[in-house]
Length: 205
Length: 205
DNA sequence: GATTGATTGTCAAGTGACTTGAATTAGCAT
DNA sequence: ATGCTAATTCAAGTCACTTGACAATCAATC
Image 1 (cartoon, chains in turn blue, purple, cyan, red):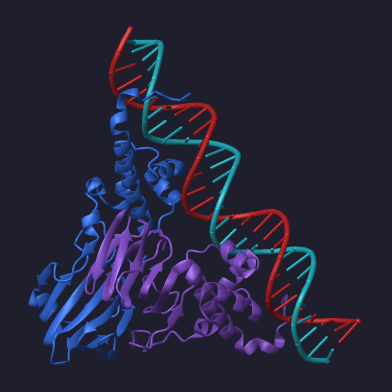
Image 2 (spheres, rainbow over the protein chains, first blue to last red; image 1 turned 30 degrees about the vertical axis):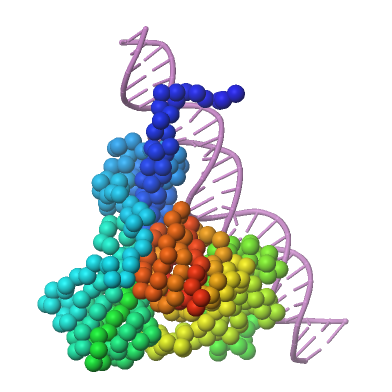
């Protein structure tokens, strides 16, 4: 009938370990992909076979501890965060008015600006997303530069956005995209509060 | 000396047509990919060979007009938009009401949905960003899965968002984040139009 | 300390998406 | 037509990844 009843003793947590394996695998995979590595590349670097990696990523097999260690080392992470709790269901939706508000260090981020976190701070996230609230007359501190890409949408108000050596005047509903390597900053030029929905990827690859 | 001097007469615009071919191809490719189609799938639907598509997408060949027409038809775009200048203002700012609108293929993307491109098609972009406009009663076609991460903000209206096995009811101002590998879809449950500002990082790259 | 048994790990063959090159066909000017 | 260019196809090739059968490893038991 049954090809195997070999695991007689362990049926109980069969499924749960299976899904947790899958989660580990998924993270490893994302981690690898984010770094633009191919299976083969990572396998070579971590000194194991491509096929093993494939199986690990798909939860068919659980890597030995030394193996896992080599993997996260190459990936530049640590084992701990491979197991960090996924933000799960609760981590998906965030209601208007129920998002954490961050008082900004005026020195670092500028005058009259507060940030509303749309994506909670957590190692699992690629994207960063905040709603910038800028009081009338407020402006961000000096130009910032970093790798990645930025996209934003003006939810309300009017601002002046400076990117590179260009200046734009935006009003509600306007949007923008640019490479984060360009120096950029902004200023509220209206007499009411302005809000920008702002997303950026840190990654360049 | 030279194996070919066959193109004697046309050397002048050689390079410019080459790059414009590439741009067309890039757009077609992005278009196809964002719809989750494989080369073969699109080729079958548009009644041409896989390899032709590949060449077109990589700018090795320029499609005949009828060919191109069939392609954009299947993709739910129009030819014009394949050639639309991606400039906005310096490619950075895009004004409300001046963003390209895409009619979606109802079969693939769902009923009563149209997309407003916030980030123009262009090879240089990591992020994808659209405003999804969903008519009352409209809903996206079956769940989609791909690698990456999604973040969105409900600009207006009320929707029901399904992610994994959870369902959420969102109203204006609510936001969400999740891993694209979770199957997800949505439905407009209000009696007015709903609009979602939606950003995602694509898979592989 | 060998024997058994499960499980990690490897090799090699398989698949699916995409690309390339040679051969064919359709368009079009002469 | 005739000849030439350029679009299109077919088949073979590549690349990333997956799968299955076998080998090595490790741990518990006799």
